[in-house]
Length: 205
Image (tube, rainbow, N blue to C red):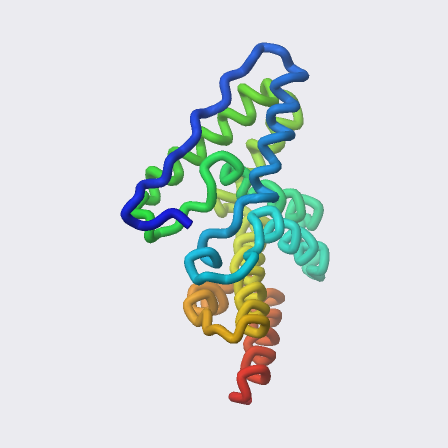
């Protein structure tokens, strides 16, 4: 955990070697950070062995596969889930209490994606697809991007409930910042189901 009094130190962006295979491998290795970096909100709440960024994205992707909305491009939703936090492989999971403005956070994430797309993956077709997906999620202008943002919120609430259940703690702020904001009807239903389950576990239903 990075204390609020200590500014986050961001690693330097990757310097390309010019050798496509070396730079591509560097990207593959960068992805390890998503597997090892713990989600800041849980760390700040002293959750033992909290989930990683990759853990979060993986469950989101499976949740997308469970959707029944035939108007959505589910394959795209799965890819959006796997790409939406990709910049965090470089910048980490920045929390509001760190005092980094939304515009500065966005700037650093855009730089990280540009570094991945152009310097590590050499603007390949795969790189262009990753960049397009990341931008689509950030811009929230398509039904798929809006749906995946709801999955982001619902997954966080699901994890909060599991940590409450397993560690006997209260994580109310994670429910307040997620379930009331759900907009897709199916995910709203999942949210109501989750809230009911939480009430049963707490003995308030």
